[in-house]
Amino acid sequence: MGLALLKMGRAEGIFIRSKLKGETSTALAEDGSDGRIRVDVTKFPELTNTRVGRFEGDNWLDPRNRNYNPSAIPKTPRFTELENPSPNSNIGRPKQLPFPGDGEYGTNIAGGNQVEFTSAYQKVDPTITLFENNDVLYAPTLMGPDYSRLESVAAYYRIGTTTYRQWMVFEHSTSTPGQGSWVFNTPMDSSFTSRYVSAANEVITKVVKFSGPAWNVYLYDLIDSEWDQLLDSNSSGSSTYQAGWDWWEQYNLANLWPNLPQLKSRYLLVQVSGTPYFVTSTYGSKRDQGSINYPKNHVSDFYEWYVGPGP
Image (cartoon, rainbow, N blue to C red):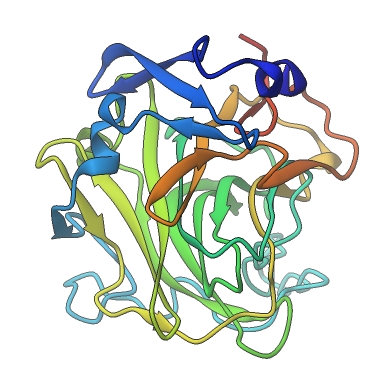
C-alpha cells in the first residue's frame, strides 16, 4: 500500500480517518512532489494546539505525590535472568523490569532529518491480563529519532498474580546502549482513561525535541484540550540511538502466549521544519524481528501497524 500511496498525485490526495474525543472526521493528507505525505493539520486539531498543561494523574515517581514510591520501579540494569525464589516463596521475581528498546514489530524512525517532534495515536487496553509471573509487554512504544533521551511506553507486566497496566517514560543513558532509568509511571486507571483515552481506545502521545538538545513526553488531554507534559523538567543531552521507533515489544510471553486484544499504532508522524509528515519510506522502515504468535500487519507503510486480531 505504501508504494501506491507515494505514486498518487497532489490533487488526488489520501483520505484517512481521525478520531478525537470519539468524533470521526475525514482528514486529507497530500502527496508532495518529493514523495512525502504531508498531514493536513486542520483535520488533526491536536497538532495545531499549543496549549500545554501539567500531567493530571498519579505519577508514582514524583516525590510530591502522596503515593510516592521510589522503589516501585527499580532503576538497575536490564535483567538477563530471574531471581531465584526465596525459601518461603514460590514466586521468582525479575531483578527489575527490562528496559525498552528491543521490539519485535512496528516501525523504525530514521534519524538525520532534524525532526522536531514525533507523535502517534496508540491503542491501549487497561483490561489486559498476562498469564505468567514476569511476563512483560510494552506496546506500543514511541521513541523520537536523532538521539532522543526519552521513550513513551504503554506497559503491561505481571508480578506474582497481579498484572500492572501503566503509562511510563524511560530515560535512555547518554553513554551506554540498553541502560537508563524509568522516570515516570502512572496507572492506566479510570482517572487516566477518562482524560487521555479516546472513544477509539487511543492515547495521543508525542516526544518533543528542544534546543540543547532536551526532551519531554506529552499526552493529549481530551478534557482540557491541551498537551500535558509528563516530566516537570526536560531531559537534557543525547542518547546513543540515532534512530527512533514505534514498536510492539515483549519479554517472556513466548513461554505461554496470553490471549491479547489488538494493539496498534496509527498516524505516526514526524514534524520537520514546522510541517508534519506521515512516516513513510522517507522517514522510516518496517521492523519485523521475530516470531510473534499473533496476527500482525502494516496497514499503511509505515505509519499504521497492528499486532493482534486483525480489523
